Amino acid sequence: MSASTYLINPLQQILEAIASIQSSQVIKNKLLTFGSESEIPSKGLHIHTLEEIQLKNVTKSYDNQEIFRDVTVTFSLSQHNLIVGDSGIGKTTLFRLISGQDKAYSGKIIFKSIDGRELTPNLDNIAIIHQNPYVFHTSVRHNLTLYQDYSDSLLISTLKKVGLWEACCHQLDYELTGDNFSGGQIIKLEIARAILRSKQVLLADEMMASLDAASSKEISNVLKQLPNSIIEIAHHYKLEDYDAVYRIENKSIVRIK
Image (cartoon, rainbow, N blue to C red; front, side):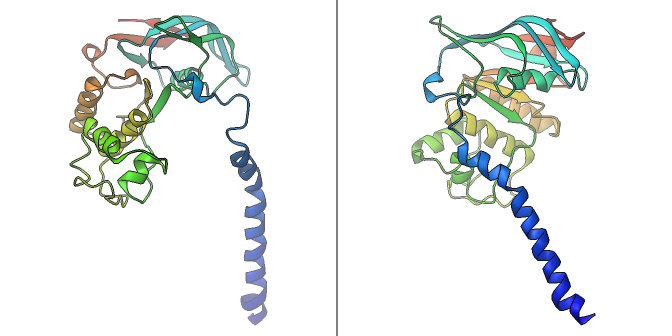
């Protein structure tokens, strides 16, 4: 019993730790090479004058299951777009295609700018707003900048745009502890991260699904006041709140408004 307590158990813990370290090697290698891969878009692809996103004859499958078949559709970036459809039908897949995170498809996806330039999907121009953004237990400053360099004046103006400056007591070094920001305020923080980085297009993936009615309305009001283009996925919505509405059905995307 003494041997088990003082020798065998610690050795087992060491072996488990070694296994964990070894299993993290692949992740470490990816982090070390991040940014050097050819498919990572360069900063030169950042354009502030995107006009529309075009899908031309796009077909997408997962494990021999067809999600989209020969889809041709155009999303105007001068309006607030809504994507609807049953659960599991391909809404999040569409976002991954548009953002360039998923390149395994046939057909073409093109970003067109006002001056006629064309780009392939990339995250230089797009930010995805999730319903459960990650918040670090550190200051608002570091949560917003993610430890990049931005001026205090720019950070403050960004927080004011999304209605967070008062919530952090007018302090960039206000500490987030995990329970002093509401769900709606965390969503605002994620939107602020995108605005700070001059992302023209916001892809909102069910971002208000876990919010109450009051918080959802507040977020909607924030979005309406922003110059950014919005493409939103939602299950609960009012058609009058959107300029254009698209439904995913029968492996296609159909505009219904």
